[in-house]
Image 1 (cartoon, helix red, strand yellow):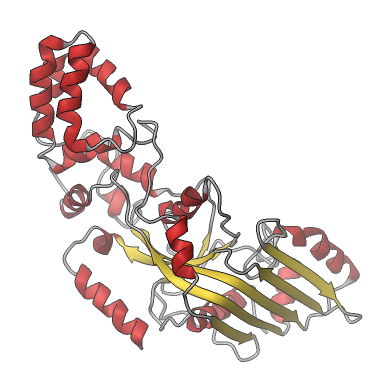
Image 2 (cartoon, rainbow, N blue to C red):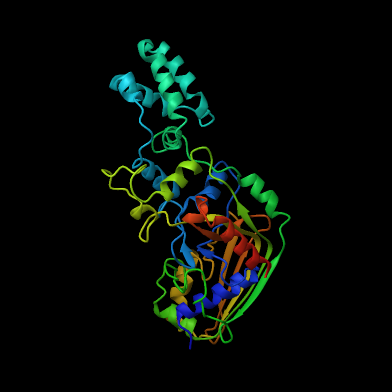
Length: 393
């Protein structure tokens, strides 16, 4: 008799194998999996998945508006780092510095960092700070030569300091173009014959944070336990599935990030700040791993059957809550392109049908990369070669 965790782990193995991943590939399922709809915010909705820091788990309970966020953690990190000595603030004075910071906060995202010295000089001449225009411009030019200072200056244009939202280099339109020519995938799961052993997975069996039978429910609920304990089958197919990658935009400085990672003590860390290497990159740090690639699909067709005989009360509870989405993808019925239908036969056996429209992308998971690889430290190339071998296996 399977537990709900057994079923979740068995589904993970069948799903990752169906996607073509060999054991050991750091694939993480994302639940729930709402469609990504083309529109004014489509780029940002896509990039939110890169912005989420993956937990140490085979399943990520995705929360688009919260959770551990890359951009906010990155901004916090650079508030705790010290660049090379520079007297910019002292040379221009506190009044000018405050006015300059307010000005840079509303500069457009397209402003080249290399132009900051020229921009400062012109701004100072126009706004009553001509006496410090040249020395300030010279100081800024020196700051640009230091990776930490340069990274801190770049962040001035982006939230929470500036007006711009952080971006990545490839957006929704390019992603959908790539997805339209990606291969098909399908897989089957039978709980009576499934492999629920995930001890050799990248997270060493760690799998937590997932929902129960319907979205928002507990995996220990009576309905979830009944569902998992009886026979469950899954027949899933996808018109197109691909791995999608994007690189952080100009707000991100890889050289400065690598410098911070490679020095646990001393410079560039400011010992007076509460943020340090251990609570950033260490065992309990907030940036131990990153979403390197997204696993995106379209044209999803999933049929889930249960041999459990659900009581009338359980059937009512399931029908009343199915609008929150059902295991395993928790897609809600929406005009954005997905639907979930639940039916019961006379014996109380349940059938769940989950579909999504063709050419409407859905993020099903991420490929997780440890911080040492993401920031380009020693061993990163070997790690990538290892993953490449696994993908070809």
